[in-house]
Image (cartoon, rainbow, N blue to C red; front, side, top):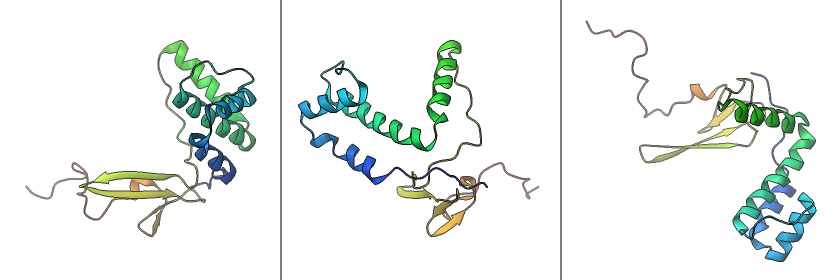
Length: 149
């Protein structure tokens, strides 16, 4: 498996996003004008926070992967034109530091994407998500032949 070259979100961006709820509405409007170059189209604070958070990440990650925005624009255009979403390439990797959470039988299981593209679960590393299966979960039904006959 090829190691991902995309770094996690910088702390400064995370801090700015985390601080959005603490800004006054006037500060939010000023930040909106700074980021988008126009007045915000709605007085809805939640909308403003989400769009600003997205824009801050977009600006940061454009530095890391300049083609990301262009790829997304092409996907959106294809979706609008055809009404169907094209399957994503299998080569797309999750960002290192991403935490995947799943609840199984009332227990929350967390998998963290490692810097080298592997996955950490309960102190062990796995090369793929499909190799992670909690010990208590049943094996997948229908795999292989039944030995009873």
